[in-house]
Length: 159
Image (cartoon, rainbow, N blue to C red; front, side):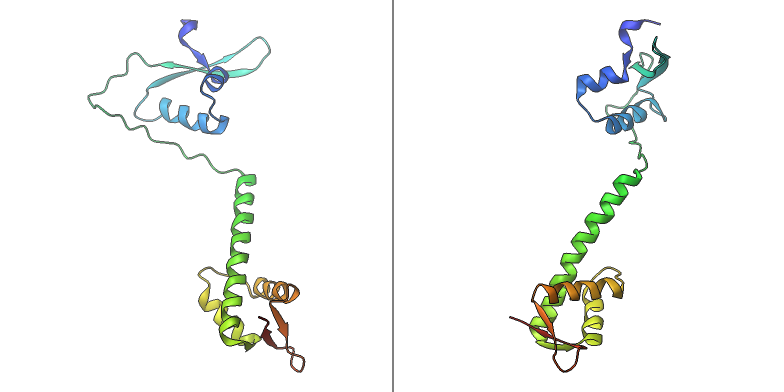
């Protein structure tokens, strides 16, 4: 094996500056599948650390001017999916707040059941009634809405 032509994963990462997860996807797509542009060799160094080494496949030939290497989709980590869920939840909270204020601005006074039904028809994503109630309470706390003094099931818009 000609050592000078093989480049270790850490060396490639240091040279390119690409994040580890992204580089793994790129290198994986270049050495797997129908188009094997890179050759992969796994080595263990003196410290017992296993590292992948890559080099250009000299036997690679293609009649095509362009080569399509399929990109590999790695599964998202639990941490990434949790961050995404939290971001979506925050965005949806703002959308629900805006919808409540829009509805109440036009109606001025509205019963809870009517507000909930109109909210469900306006928002474009599935929402739990508990979450909507929390958003209404949040708007009451921030003085956008108030409960009617005589009937707590009726909300009044405060301009």
